[in-house]
Amino acid sequence: MAIATERLKYLRKSRRGDGSGRAFRGKQHRFAYASLLRKVHSLARKRGVQVVEVNPQDTSTIGMLKYAPQLSLSKDVAAAYVIGRRALGFRERLPKGYGKLLRDEAFLAYAQRFYQTRAEELREQKKVTRDRPRKNRLSRELKRVHGALFLLSSLQGPPGSQREVTDGRNFLGAHPWRVLRAGLFLPLLRSTVPRDLSPLKALLHRGAWEGWKGSLGPPPGGGPECANVHST
Image (tube, rainbow, N blue to C red; front, side, top):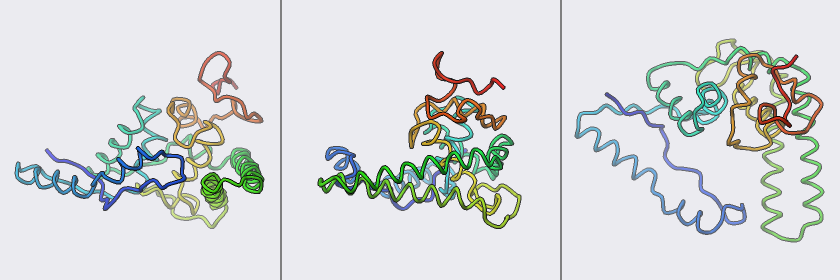
């Protein structure tokens, strides 16, 4: 028996003006993650339970993109699943459907246009707003949009190793899991952290995103009014 944990020293804290709310920020700042982790490790050692710490890089992203839709798991359970697999020494191979998607020029162009349009909207909103907290939120979102554009353009760099390793690097010279997150979540699922990840199942297995092509409407697989990615 063993316990697998991420090798984290601290959790990212929310800040005033980011829309998280004062009560939530207070609870988050009082949460002593490192102290809790030390207690877990200490208790495990006393009871003879092995503790394995793993690299935390992209565990949540891989869980949401791969195992949440594939095994119908929540995003948190999916991330824990990745942590457990990593502790056992497994490497996360990129599903064939996602590999196909990353080579689809139409998909990449669609995602880039989405973020370019969003960047223009955010810049216009910053010009007219006088509310400082709102302007700060817009600036942070604009920074994230620029980061997404950089990730999407990174696929055009020199090819790297073709081995898709657990940390998510070395696929066409980029971070494939991060590129997929940037290209799928906001442009297609309309959320930075979608609650329903089941529409990704068709993409994961087949790289099929026909239901979204040329449309900024609702994602496929969500009811009678949604497009159907399985149709060809």
